[in-house]
Length: 112
Image: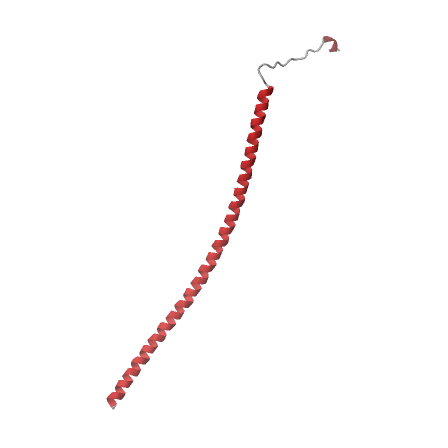
């Protein structure tokens, strides 16, 4: 009987020791979960910040692209206008055209 009681006490001690070990492990797991949860919230916040920055950057880039397209269109119009002006100037200054100077008759000159 006493051997059985000692054996039962030994088993009880082992179970208590194992239970303490399991409780410690569960506490560590819970701590790790909390840390992981905090890390996850931090990463989610960083991701949200990065997404906002990307949206802002995309918006700025789209505005720049629009401006560049407008400038390109204006350059195209100016190029067309410059070519038209050059063509008109070339037509008005032809080598066969003679520019005459008007002479002023001496009677129109006044001498004081």
